[in-house]
Image (cartoon, rainbow, N blue to C red; front, side):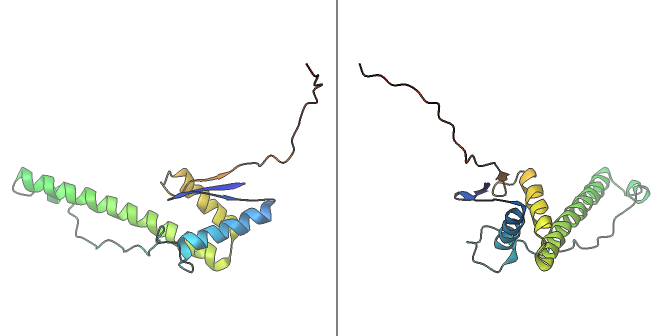
Length: 146
């Protein structure tokens, strides 16, 4: 059983074999990010915008600035720029992976993407694959009348 922890509750989907898992993974990825279905706006995967190419000062140039305040400001700008670039690359990688899986109808890759998103701890991205018990065991008891 595939359990999707979504914004307004959980969805339970029966998975009987590997083909079912990959077909459902592709369907879920398409529903969440493909833009083909009305998903209530819970999931939006927009193409990330590359951060502007700012001229970043070297350590040597920063040290030549006339005041400590300007030096700290330049260092902070450089850190912010580095964080923006790393964030952009991560978002672009995810965006490209989702679109490639959907384009190629690659259910195995869709499942890996969904697992990675779930493991990242997103509020609405958690997904569990849990075995469904279909066999029951009842112990026979002898009942006596009192």
